[in-house]
Image (tube, rainbow, N blue to C red):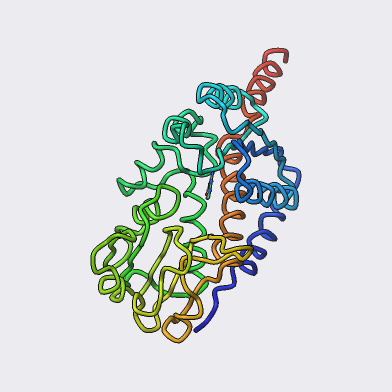
Length: 292
Ligand code: GUN
């Protein structure tokens, strides 16, 4: 079995972004609600890598019991703010908040996560949105590393979440020989996933996937990040699949670091699609022409 080295892949992309992003006046705004330690950790990683590639980063911390209207008001303010070129709301949100309503409030031009319903709908309809959801983009980078031509492969996805499973399913739907999406409650799940050349798992259940779920020499993409005591483990029981899988993404150090860098790549793409100063430039140009 071979490892897909997520940190190495992320570092290579980071270097390529550094070359183009330095001193770009692109700013990512991150809204973080509550005190969940994992969410705080992910956001601090996003902040560190942003600064490393020369992007500006603004964090907005809101208390766990914040009212939905307050979150939406902040998003509206950031939509209007010309300095902010990309925005995300760190997920998951507390139960009293409506994630769909909150994400829908983001100006699609600033949707750095690619999770705005308009963009998910485009993916579902086989269209290409301005940016891909960062996790889907990370999965594609991991697959690219294996140099597998996935056109003639069968794919199984376990997990129907809007961050990873669903958008990846929509994206790959017409690009592979066969694809199916399941969840952890699917009946006879192992007999189904055992047919897949590529298995993508995003269910958030520590070490759920063992040898019986896996076709010999399949590519296993583990999107799960779970805590067992102080250790971070994936949805795949690494020790149990070692002799069955062809490739696997480790946890930690697999899809996670690639996802962070793909988010920041999205921020640069959005900036290039909608440079904040374009209207100012046009005005300057128009005034210049007038005064000549
Ligand atoms: N939480 C886990 N993954 C993600 C992600 O890709 N984006 C956001 N906003 N929150 C997440």
